[in-house]
Each structure stands twice: as C-alpha cells, then as structure tokens.
Image (cartoon, rainbow, N blue to C red; front, side, top):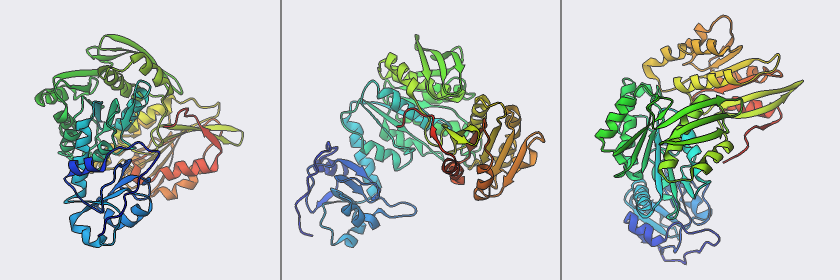
Length: 488
C-alpha cells in the first residue's frame, strides 16, 4: 500500500490526534497518520466526515465488511484487525492496525479517562438507569459542559465507545453501566473510574440469569469496584437491599457512602412531594442543604430517580440553584414515559409511551403513573401491556402478579400481547375488559380503534416485543403534538 495525502477536516474540533490514538492503542499505522480525528464511529451508516471508524466484530456482523462504506462516508482513518488486513489490500485510506479492535477501543477509552479532569458519574440499577443518566446530562449541562452516553450505550462496547468519544475538556462525564450476568460491570467500571457511583434500585430485571434479588444486588454492586479514592457511592435508602449494598460498597473500599430516599436517615432525603399530571414539586435535604425543585416529568418513580441526581450534582460541585431550576425543563425520553396529546373525534386523549422496557418494578411504576393521569368525563384508563423478558422460571408468577396492581389502578380496559404475559390474561379481574393476542401485530388494529375523548392510554413492554409499533400506529392515526417541552 502506498501512502496518500491524509485529508484535513475543517469545522469540527479535533477529538484526538492520530499519533495520540496510535500511542494509546499500540497501533501500527499504514498509509499515513491523520493530524486530527474529530469523532469515533462503529457504524458506517451514522459516521460523520473526520471520524475514525473502528471495525468491531459483533455477534451478527463484522465491521471490516463495512470498511469501504466507512471510507466513502468520509472516515479519516480505519482501525482494523491484523487478521483482516489482507482483505483490505486495496485500501488507500490511513489505517491503524491492531490485534483486537474492541480491545483497542477500550484502550483508547482508558486514555480518554486518564487525560480528563472531569467529574465522572456512573449509574447502574435494575430500573431507572437511563432516566437518571439523562437527568444528570440535562441538569449538569446548565452548570457546565457535559459528555454522556448516547441512548443505552451501557455494555462491553457502548461504555468504551462513550469513553473514547469524551473530549479532554468537558467538566462532567456521565456513564450508564448495565449488565445481564455477573462479572459484566467490573471491567467496565474499572475503565470509567467514577467519582460517584449510583445504584438506582434492585428489582427483578434479568432475574432469569440470577438465583434471586440478592445475586442481582451483588452484580450491581460491582460498580463500586471502580470508584476512585475519596469517591462516593449513592445507594437507595428505601431499597430493601440497602444494607447489603452498603456492606458491599465498604468491602470494595468506597470511602464515602450516602443514602437517598424518603427514609429519615437518608443523606439525600425527600421531605415533601406533590404529584401532578405533568410534573412533581419536591423539597429535599441534600447533605444538609434544602433544595426545592419542580420536576418536569410526572411520577413517584421519577422523583426517586431525581434524588441521586441532586446528590451527585452536589458532590460534583455543581451550582445547586441552577440544578434545581433545570429540573423543571426535564422531559421524558421516547419509550420511557413520553406523553402525547392526540386528537380523536370529539376531543383528545393522552398517550403514555413506556414501550422501551419492562420488569415488575417498572410495570408497577407505569401503572401508578396511569392511575395518576387525569381522564375526561367519559374517559377510560387503558393499559396496553406486553411481555417482561428475561425472568426465567419466575416469568409465570411475575406476569400473573400484575393482576392486583391492575385492579388497584382501576384500569378500565386492558390489551395484552406476547406468550410470556398469557398467565396475566388468565387471571385478570372480571371488572376489567381484556383482549389478549399471542403476538403484537395481531393487537395493533384493536388498540388503534380503541381511543375515545378523555382516555389515557399507557403502552408498556420489554423492548424486544415490539410494542413501539403500537405507539407508532397510534401516532400515525391520530394527529397531535408531544407534551414534552425539551427534546435532548
């Protein structure tokens, strides 16, 4: 391969120099070294000119197969495996050749963490991870520059990718760390090395991979293994496993441990809360300082997630008055409680999109949210529910166990789809009109035909079931605008 001139990309702040990348990854350059790399990409479809393209090999694809597309999209350099180099023999773009592309991305992520002076916050938990991460992104952006993971980039490639994309000069770095099995969080949090580690709640998510909730707590507590010296652990004091998590934090050597919740011994304590249709007003005592805030997303579970946000912001040295004000402009994410007011003949109805994920705890929270949503004079509360995945041998019991919360919510009509949720269809109270289908596509038309003026409709399931198609069908059928005030 002969060397060619390396293109220079204007209008974007350099993220890395080519030489810094080579040094961090121990890479071998071919065809020259770019002066500047403006971003990191693992997907040729979303790559921007100037990005470095990492040809990661996944379960269903190999990034090397998309090297030509990445080059055509304007990649400044391709990071490729030594073993696939012969297949790239005609490449004229600069290459960085490494032994393992994903491992090299992790090395670059470690270098990004080493060079920054940012306050780093990591979030895990069975529910509320993304909500808490996005709230931290939002409120801290009102006090300084923030870098945070995109969507739910919280796994073995998402965390290194997010780190590698972090600019040297940001003031706050926010990372979501997830897991399905024991041992997955430890290597990721040791890359992130947070100043503050948050566990939102221990609940029956991914229970099919664990013996019980204590095992889940031990797996989530791996986040404490990466906390820097003098760092903090923020743990839900209202969680039944608070004492276990506190013990595990101490065992991991975390020097500062704080609890959050309504519990009277919480360091970040909820004093008062008023729950309204589109928001909540709270008073909290954060390490002795009283903070008042209006939260722009409704729900008791949202308030619980905002307490560690306040605690982490305080520890990070943020302006708490600005943080409190910023909470009023929070908005729900797509699939995570986003609300829409849609027009139907004779009036409007409310659609609550909770279609991204589901487990018993988040189902309860979503049903509570539906119960608190006002309806019109002749309106109904309608729940559209699908399978909660990865519950293993507990699936039948936990799906059937939703019958009582549904009765307590005073749901008027229930639509169900999915093989796992069939046990719930069998035990729904006679007072609730219920329609069950095996697959979601057979349910769509019935749900789309259901809305009447004054109704409140909540759609909730695990993402893999595809209930987002029901939400999309409702949005396509009925005109209206999202109630959310701030997209981010």
